[in-house]
Length: 480
Image (cartoon, rainbow, N blue to C red; front, side, top):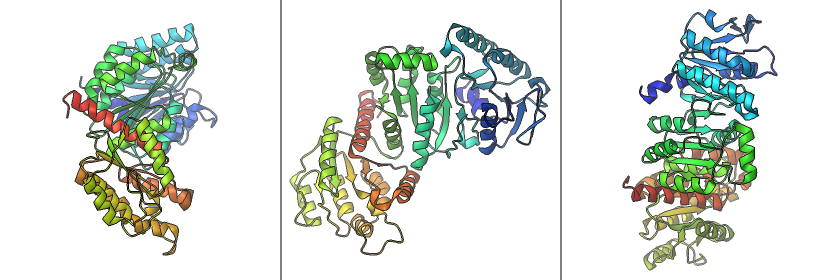
């Protein structure tokens, strides 16, 4: 069976059977059901609870057998011991996919492991695909499908995520939403009794709506298949992964969380490099790196130019680039002459190109393009340019308006300049001078263009280094 067809009942169901529906707002059977409804799912929803007749204005059925049609997807939020027989009920009804949110399986000990194996065996016997247990749900925004524990409703977009921790996954999705980025799919895979990280990476790799794949991983069960799939998918789509459990304490925590065996981090790191996986160090890096790949081309080399409104940020960026394996190059004479013709006499005359708070019209944009034209520069980081989009109510002599004058129409120009020169342009800037709401609006506006404004220079340096790493992988393996 083709992978898209196999996953269709999970991500594009015509109707959903919800087993374990509750009237109590304090129970997951109420919370997850309300999120499924509030997310705007267009198909029929059939709650199941033998003790209720109506929940959230939906007719409730006493059992799966009594539902009048065959749903594609079942969502199960009932006690652990009830789950295996309920999976049997779903198979008998003809349901082809299930999400088991219930916890209390392999992560709690031997009895839970037995229940989990039983549940998985039943699902496999009927060729059912199963997510979980011990997960917080899935999302398919293009299908308005949000059977989730938290009320998180991202818009459709090019990012897809599979995570062995729903809590971490929610944090990353929330970061994306705050920056104006949408998701094609989200899966909290939990204990992975049946489907695991590898299965979803394989599906995302063939999905035309997905451009970049994010993953949080505590352990991989079938390392050989994982690497085969990751190597194949990495040819066309970046895989950005936060892999934890590198310390003994982290490994113990992972075992108690999702029953994951973490293995040697050094071994995983070497294998990840061979498969083209980009590793992130924390949740911010995971999102920042993934979002960078949406609009930016990969680096053709590691030579970097920096344009900065203030000197200190430029120094921090130079250090961060060097630590990330990038080369802050010495600019050739031709580029220096061009910058001399653009900038006031007090500019820094070097790389980073420090404007020293210069506010002449077009200084930021013109300096940026001078670096992009330079054959010794493969990519550029622009620092402090968030002020190039002022609040409308500011007066003509305000700081933000002066910054806007220096930047020209920078936010509109950056996508065009990326396409023109086929070089990445990364923006990093504080937003304190415009206020929290203004900064949020500017970040969302950039997200609409597929761009990120990184809060600190080191974040931009790490993201740019990831573009270099992925470009090297593609070239070394003949994929580019």
